[in-house]
Image (cartoon, rainbow, N blue to C red; front, side, top):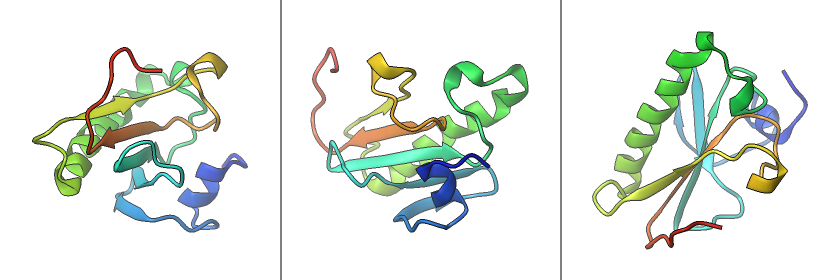
Length: 114
């Protein structure tokens, strides 16, 4: 597996506040939250960024979304709403080369983001 912070969290080399885990995905609290609920949802499979996912990853990408919905229910933001964000590239704010989705909720979100 790659040598980045998310890979180390997946292998439990670095501790994290895990809120969900199954055989394909790990979800944990962001250490620098931008909302009262800020959870990162990360595939355990090494995919550097969304543009490197292939057709073979379609089921995994769909699973990320269904896990996000489950985490939102568990975190109590399903009724009020939440935002899902995947960053790709430096202009989007991508800082870790491991595909991940941010689940943000617990406060009103502005539009446009950024």
